[in-house]
Length: 195
Image (cartoon, rainbow, N blue to C red; front, side, top):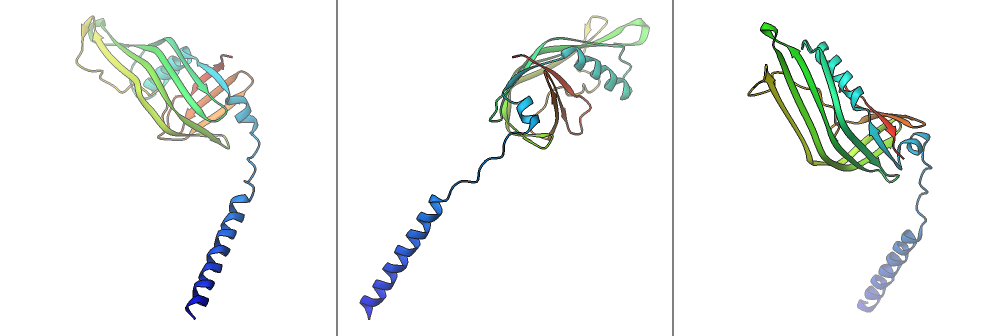
């Protein structure tokens, strides 16, 4: 009786192993072919239009009640986006904001953005979903002076011109042009293909 029970257990174990083996041998579900958007945007390196960022920052500040009269941008930012979704953003640019103050003086605000951000960005439909974003290598510094006198702090919020993994990013791409627009943010980054 005991031998027959052991025999039954052994047969059951062999059957389970055979079924598990069958599951391992099943073919993987084939991957979907890349979409037109993925083919256009990924596998490329892109350069941001810093002057366009400056124009949008000026518009956003004015819409928020800041009496800025001029914003100029200088420098570069590149976005290397692999076909597998790996993303590397290298930033080295500045924005200079001019705001008239009392007695004919001008408040000058200088924001510098430099360093590297990395992560993954997978496209679903027309939205890139950033994941595991690491911006510890990115530094954003802002200073202000009034009539040449340094101020303790910038008296208003500067619109964000970079992106991270807090929200999805609306993406458009055609030919050598791409845009990225973090959802809920006023700034859209305009890119030109570098390679």
